[in-house]
Image (cartoon, rainbow, N blue to C red; front, side, top):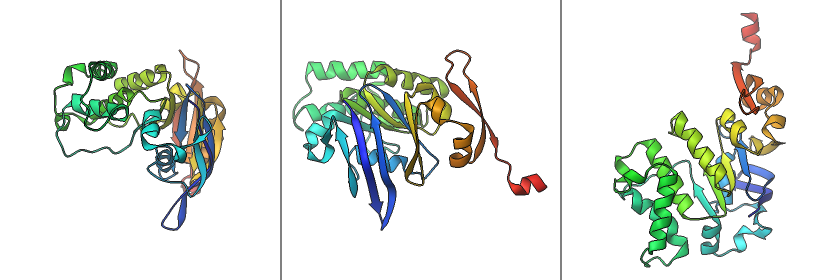
Length: 262
């Protein structure tokens, strides 16, 4: 399923948090949303999974405006893993993952054998099958993050929206989770703060700065020393990864005028 944003603007407290954002996430592609803190990445994603309503523009799924779809139809199309997901109730891991099946049934319907199989497969995919009976409040932050990704996979969406999906994960699980998502065949739009991970997994990237889109293209085309200095305020040295050939970034502080005169 294709995902498109056309001229999306989101306002809050009388100002635009994101303004006139236009981007495409073609079916089956892994698309990264990059930018410094406060650039509008999370706000853009919230418009995609319909927590925030754009003041202007539209989010389109295969050309259909998102706000014309019924809630259940949206939930079957889009699964989201937000940056901050808390629960005060000690559901088991299996119960949390099973919530991903709700868009496919009525609220009071019992899970079928097929549902249980889908949930078990999702837990195996994220490496947590042995924790199915554990309470989520007993898990580490990284384990909880993988449970939320399993819940999204159990939802069997066409589009997966991820807001900093590698938060709390060690490097092994960062690589494994992103590889799993990339292999899923889903259309993926992910906000990522680790630029090297973005360069390694994304087909295309879009860079936000101050709520506006400032660059779009392949990681090799976009993640240039000039853009990284302008947007992120760092000096970057771009080198090819010895195995994949994809760009990898080595960072230094940008020297300020005060530093140069010290």
